Every structure is written in C-alpha cells, then in structure tokens.
Amino acid sequence: HDVEHRVSQRFVKMKLGLTTLLLAAVSVGAFAPAAKETVSVCRGYHHSSATALSMSSATETAPFVQGPRIIRDELPIVYVYDHCPFCVRVRLALGIMNVKHNVNFLGNDDIPTPTKLCGKKIAPIFEIPEDDFIMTESLDIIEKVDQDERFGASGQILPATGRSDIKAWQKSVQVLLRTLQRPRYVATGLLPEFQQLDGRHAFIKNHQLPPYEKPEWKGDGTDENPGMPMDEKLKLYAEAMAKDPAPLLEDLNSKLIELDDLVYSENYCSEGGLSMDDVDLWARLRSITIIKDVEWPTKLRAYMDNLSALGDVPLYDEMAL
Image (cartoon, rainbow, N blue to C red; front, side, top):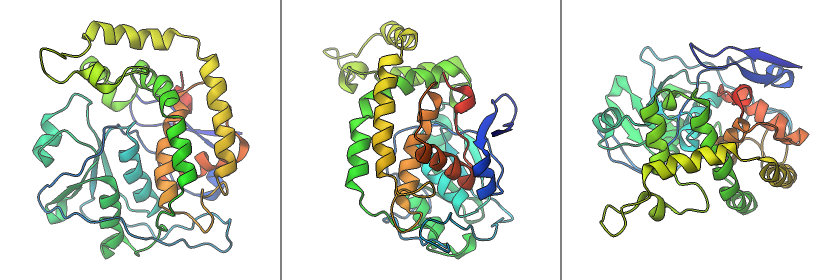
C-alpha cells in the first residue's frame, strides 16, 4: 500500500510506495520547476564535462547505498523550475549524494532573479554561498559537487554508459509527452513556477503544443513572423486539456512497456549500478506522473518510486490530471 507524505504549504501530497520507504529513509521534499538548459558564464563559474561516480552495493542488483549526510554551515542553493528535467537532474543527484541543500523555486515569469544571479533567465542555477560561487548547466553542476571533497566522496554515481537505445526511446515519445504534459503543468495550478497567472501565461507563450514548431509558435520578432497570438495559444492549451486522452494514453502505456524492457532493474536502468543514465532518465520520466491513469509496468514503477525516495524528489501522482 502507499504511504502519503505532505509537502510544504499549499502543495499536494506526494505518494511513495512501501517498497520505496524500505529502501531509503529519506523525507519527500517540495517541488521544482523547468526551463531549457544552456551553459552560462557566471561569477566563479568554470566549464567542464561531467565525471564519473561509483556505486556502493553488495550485488549487481542491490539498491544504492548512500554515504553519510553532508550538511554545510552554509547550505548550497539550487534555483529551479519544478517541471524542468535539467533542474531535476541536479536535485536528484544532490539527493543521491546525500548533500543537504536549499531549493529555491523560480516563478516561470521571473526574469530579474536569474538575471541578477547569472545574467539571463535560465535554470538550474547552483550557488555555493560560502565561496560566492554560482554556475549553471546541470551536468557541470553535478561534476562540481562530485569533485568537491566538502560534499562527500567523489565517484558515488557511475558515468553515463551511452545508452543509445534509451535515447532513441526518449526521442520516440517526445511529441506524445509534450502533448500530454505541457497542458497539465499549467492546469494544475499547483507547481511553484505556475502559482500565478503570469507564470502560467509565460510558459504557454514560449512552449508550443504539437504539431506546431517553435518558430511558428513564438515567431522570430519580425513583422513577417510575429508568432501566434496569445489568445490562440490559450485556446489550444484549453482544447488539449479538454480532449479525451484515451488514445494518447494507450500509446504511452505501450511505450512504457517498451521502456520497461530496456531498464535493467528497479534500482538502476543500466547494468553495473546507479549511473548518470539514471540521473537523466528518471529526471525525464518524472513528469509522466502528472498524467492520470498511466499504466506503469511493475519494474518501471518500482524504479520511479525507488529513485524518488533515494533522491528526495517527489513524484506528481497525487496531482495527476
């Protein structure tokens, strides 16, 4: 049976399975938002590729064993959008590495805050206050934390293995997930970045629904291509929410069965242990839980619950539409 935890203030209850709680004694925290990831130069920032991390477990299919809790006098801060997979990567990795941190959720229309921190509207942003250090780009942030001995042992998460099969699967569901997820992000009214109307409208303004492409939706700022009128965008989002999702759900359920066959175990997706493959895959799969009546294969559902508990990042099941 499921055990329910309450999230802070106005947010809804997050659901974690009993199996999850047996695997990790961690609390389920608040939400975070989304945005496209880009590399940005900020004060103290250095750019490098993500490094390796290694897993501690007794057998090949054993759950990941966390190191000791790391609590700095001044906690690191991540600035995020809750629905953003790039932001979720960082939150999940910090949780796996057991690094206590503060999560600051940005409103989707908030331009001044990230611009003051880093020169542009972007997420995630990572800050180490004790060093007056700020950087962006999720993989670089994870590498930075992994290499800094103040945040525990290096190499806790294995490097990515180059799973082209999983990447191909992700590409195959891109249109399907955009169609189902994007209207639901704003329709709940519960995600931190969408608490206010301006935040919801900012997302709708910039995120096209299939079959439209970004140039057609947003335009390019010229008189020749000003983009779609906002009223039309709002209408399309409303129609997408009102539409019977059954045919799309049938397709999604079939695709999840395909993915279940690609996932190695309920504790990690690639043979050998928990890796950056999981950090990327789980961060992208999390938003599927905002879609109601999805039929998860047993192993894949356990995988979602287990990493949710391990990384202390809640799923959306209780607010699914």
